[in-house]
Image (cartoon, rainbow, N blue to C red):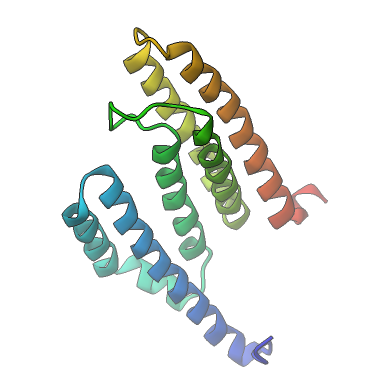
Amino acid sequence: WVGMGDYDSITLAGRAMSGVFDLLAVWMLYLLGKRLYDKRIGLLAAALGAAAVLPIQLSHYFTVDSFSTVFVIAGFYFAIQAIPIHAPDEEISGSNLIHFVLFGFVIGLAGACKVNTLPALGIIALAGIAWIIAEWKKAKFALGLKVILFGWGLAVLAAFVAFRIFQPYAFS
């Protein structure tokens, strides 16, 4: 698309793409820290992520780690959105299902980049189990449990669809 498909210039295009994804990872770290704690922690997480040396090296060599990191961090963010275990006043409802789907989709994308990131799909199961343990005596527990169980199925389905579309060679 940009005329950089030959052997000498593909590394330049790859480094630029990896750099963009590294910046997205820093932004996702900020959003995750802000969601879990506050804006100061988000800025601290982003600053520490931006100061890390390994992502710079991985971008230089155009590896898949820059891409999969963004998707795994986004998976953590959507898991927290789907199952709000850190805020007791937030409830689980049907509106959380879109976050289960987004979680599954980005983890499927991470797996398409690097297959050893697929176990990150278990994050949503752990978050759901933590919610079940914390909320089992509450009044709306039955509804929350149904949403979580259905959400788990949606997350696995979305991860499979994303992996199937973006890593078709795994099925050939």
